[in-house]
Image (cartoon, rainbow, N blue to C red):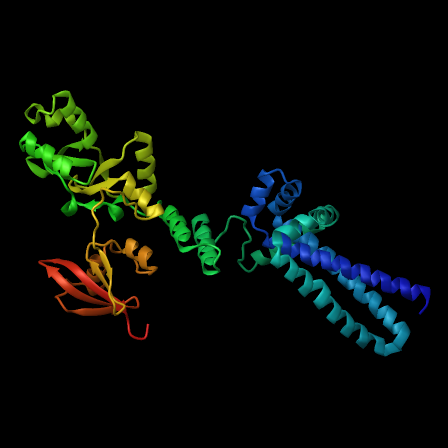
Length: 423
């Protein structure tokens, strides 16, 4: 081989190396995690800041890289064809085609892109100066090419608007956490907490409130001794106070305020005026989102609210702890009453109280029962069957077999759930 041939061969090797950089940079820059990049940039990493600036105009960056990659690939192929023609004659065209196809696919496509996909952040940071140089050289050409592409696609009704996204930020976060959990990078508890946090703006207080049938309240007309005994025996710190009827909530008693008042009168129950001890009740609509209610609790420095419907009728109550439990899971303390709401049976079935919320059951057992149309598991059975089933009736839906074990008047109080056959 002559010196000219050796120089041509060296030029081909250099061009293939440049193609390696172009392909790897394109993949690394598009696959990089913007969250991790932002974290590195905040810590002062100059290359991370550079990458953030480059991907702000991703279409311009990718266009410039593609232009550069095609230039070096075409030039390398042309030089290889010329070199092999001079060595093998006309058959050199076939040899050049085979050799360059194999070389470019392996060393300029699969190898750099696999590397970049395996470590996108590290790769993007490493090639960031090269990417900046490419944008400086071919950025104008890329902008022109993108303009032509956009107008051609618009003829077919395709828009490349940057703000068109199929997923919201919440959905993207939820999907990312679900994928990481499936891959083993995120444990179930962390996935549930992130999901609970993302759900706050979708759920309403009616979805998590304690229904009025389960509320513990005290009657303002009862003797002070009875009131004090009921409040101190209750596992709850705060209790609604009603007068005349349970629909007429006139105050909220805090156990600490009651104890302070007792101390001031020398523990003489007869001297307690319960209405003076009670605080003014706070009523909130049942359609308030949990996100708004959480902000309201924090803003008012309050922990307790009475939930009412559109007619002003009492529906239940909601506390700050209820909302926090939607994020972190059940919070139990030494005064909580243990509720046997869910019981695993030896045969693999689960016996559930009808009042158990669907969301709590899904979280505890990693199920995926829908909770859009009903809040409790009994409500789900009624919604799906469009009736109030009799005891021992069984139904199959959502991959589960539901057997009504106990019914009290129009309420389903206990249900057995097992996987459906073939599910």
